[in-house]
Length: 458
Image (cartoon, rainbow, N blue to C red):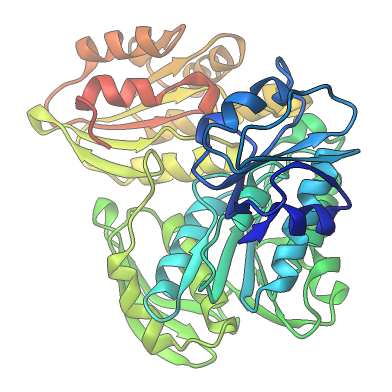
């Protein structure tokens, strides 16, 4: 985005106070992340109203989008206030207008597990051939994603967006903004179920994006996920399926190399080519296949895509392998956790050499499904690790109790109240040659355990 304050006001039906000619070249809802030239969006927060930060934000931001009934001092020289009835609605309207104005193709990635990694894989594949932009980190919400859209460079040819949700209606909003040309689904599994009465309602919320897919575009769905079976009938777009043994996109001769990754043959409608992925876990191979299928939908061929696999890496705390002292190997998957993601991580740990140590934090936002989900993880952990340390309180205790009930020796079952206690306990528990998995919801803070063990490596 590069617009004058006057043009922004015209696009959202606002009124300018101050310099109407000042240029804005990005947007941000978090005053701590403001860059020179940004448009600051003043929104009510859980604790503090964003309008409180407008004077400070305007030290760097060119303008602020504010509610028209809030009493604010006049903006400084060369700055502007753009007053509207509803800043959030105007912010979304502006992001949608920016998307319509650009000539780029939009690829949207959603699902329950692997979204950020798949989004990053797809962006890395595409950027080797086209000028590509993408949303950063997990800024995938109705607050974060529009800022990412509005802050993209003018020369972007393809924009890869992660679209996330925790409540019904959020993907409908993002879909209306993005109007994707390619819509890619990773697996849909129990996550954020605290805000839904059933998995059927989760699936319906994920399906909100379908109505916004360009009918001349492509829907990319996971053939191994039965929850996506009826998505193809709900769009006029072309459909590409990945993951099944006979689907248009698949991996053949797949070899699991443990912590060294996977290799095999990538098969797409455009052809077949060998690949070598240096990231451990069959789930990472599935993420690569999903990204490769979306790249195919954007006009790339298997021969262009497969070599990119060797260059891919995981984002911080999303499956990184760190070699520690005393021949200890650390699998840092501490960024977040859902039942499906923890199960996949435990399957990877089970294939590792040496004593297998699992550090598992609580899984949040599961609502009424939480107790059963944590017990399921406990039963699986009993057969996938040799030593278990759970972190947290009530729900993590259920993991530990179920693991012991399923056969994990009591002497190998440990718990800690928080990440600091877990890090301290591990220093007395770890032995040379161990492989340790660290996995839990973000709110547990297990990244601090990783930092304590690795001295800040990631």
